[in-house]
Image (cartoon, rainbow, N blue to C red; front, side):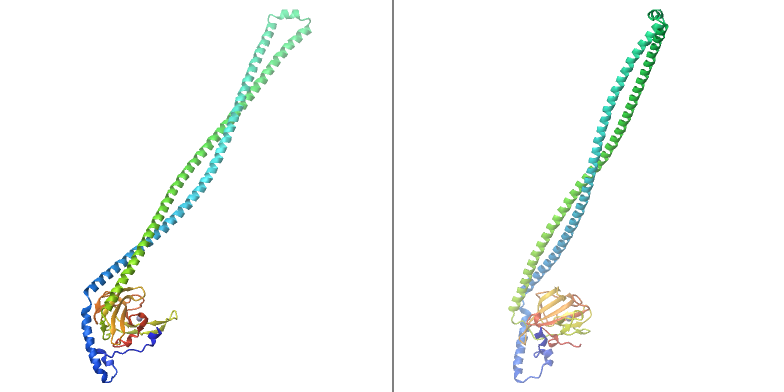
Length: 452
Ligand SMILES: [Zn+2]
């Protein structure tokens, strides 16, 4: 870079239009110069015809291939990014579903606990009911016993009454004969009456006891009915819980199904990514191979044409507004970094035609990822100073030539624009010495600019 910066401006000393810039020369060299002029003219004539049409044809087919590969790469990159999006969406869905399954599993666990508790209560209630049933059966036995007692007592009572009746009716005389005195008679009568009162008392007691037992039985039956109600309530609760549980379980299995669908979709997306990635890699390899072929074609065309030569440059714009930026080192106002502006900027209206500064082989015609936007590089071959030169035209609105084409000086190659790293319509023009940007020289040393 430093070398380029300090390079002495080279002046054309050879031919027609630029001859006026020539310094006065000693007369002895004029003859030599005249001869070389003729040779140069002959070469120029030759160079117009020497490019085989086949080279240009295969060049354009290669360029075509390159374009197609580039499109294919773009397509596969889009597929890759789509597949990545699909995969991350599927994974997000999967984790969301998994979360929901977790929640449902918690709910199922809670429900299972509730079901077990209700089941337990039902068991306890059943036991209570069966206890009550036993008590009722016992109570029924007691009632029956009591009834038997009452019945027995009743028959005794009836016998006593009959005996008394007998005494009162016909038995008086017999009784009188058996009784020794009045006192005995009265006592006997009292005894008879006492027996009657006792019988009645016993009867009453027994009836009361039976009534108590029956009341107990009624109480027990009401307790049992209450327990049966409770059991029915618990069973209905359990039925509800069972229904909820089976609903949860079916939801869970549904979600599990969705999860495996999401997993499958993620796996498919992953496969699609791998396929797109493989296609990109293969396309890129092919792209490199085709690019190499193009370079080889250019190199072989250039080497097979040692007479590819030119006499000097013309300004590539017939008209421009002003030179908006010179070649040279400048400090970036933002980053503060010193950088070589490797060309000269000609501000011109968008769409202004750009012409080849000299005849040569179009090496590059297309889009630059390096900031030149649409750009063209022309390889001009050897100039009279013994060096080979190339020129670069950047930020074109559009390119009007194609790689591999031979262009004559003044032939249309594109239009002024503001593509790439550019803030306004202008032509960025570089001159390379030795065919490499590393030796970008100040265009002012080579190209005549009509005004500033
Ligand atoms: Zn520039």
